[in-house]
Image (cartoon, rainbow, N blue to C red; front, top):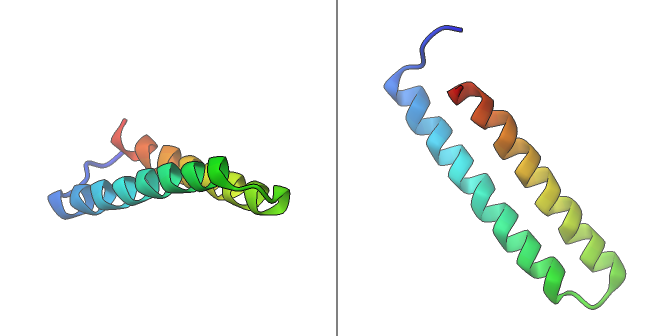
Length: 61
């Protein structure tokens, strides 16, 4: 794999941090939700954010 430029690394850091924050917030919202459909919505959002974060992390390996 080709090396990443400093700008690309900064962009990855920004995106990974954003997905991490989104995951944490969605997980918290899901825990607080009482409506099962709302809870499921936030759980799916949390999983999606974590999946996206993990995909981006692969660029750093």
